[in-house]
Image 1 (cartoon, rainbow, N blue to C red):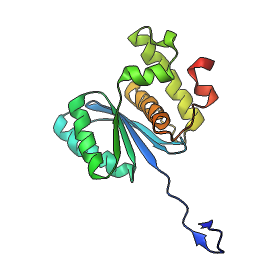
Image 2 (tube, rainbow, N blue to C red; image 1 turned 60 degrees about the vertical axis):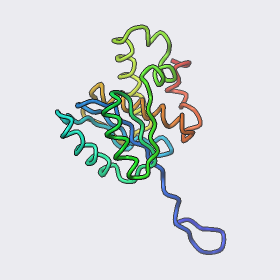
Image 3 (tube, helix red, strand yellow; image 1 turned 45 degrees about the vertical axis):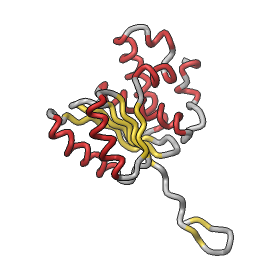
Image 4 (cartoon, rainbow, N blue to C red; image 1 turned 120 degrees about the vertical axis):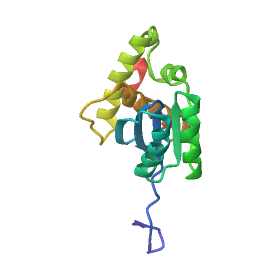
Length: 172
């Protein structure tokens, strides 16, 4: 509770939450609050589109109340997630890998696909250390990319005013 200035107390404002998803039958996900704190990161292998539909519902339920969902990858799989998140009242953003990479990676880190994946993995580990309570035992590439997709969305939505200095590609 927070003092409301009238001698009483008011409920503290609820944190907004964002779920970032790197789409695929093997799906990476990252859950952030509106202050940029990484609450959870992981990867799930759904195996089939049918299981993915139920799995998307399950992950959204586990994430709790989210105000935004950002997805990157296969359009049809994105539609599955967008439909389910939309029913929960969440804003849905779609991003191409080139878009979030241009904002978060240095141009030299994007010269090849393999180089971009390696740089994304290293940056995601830095984000986890800097912004996270979540400490995964291992970090698959789809989960690492979900972390960065989420970081991009936090900036895009204005939930973070700027990248923390240690994550800024101009300073690496």
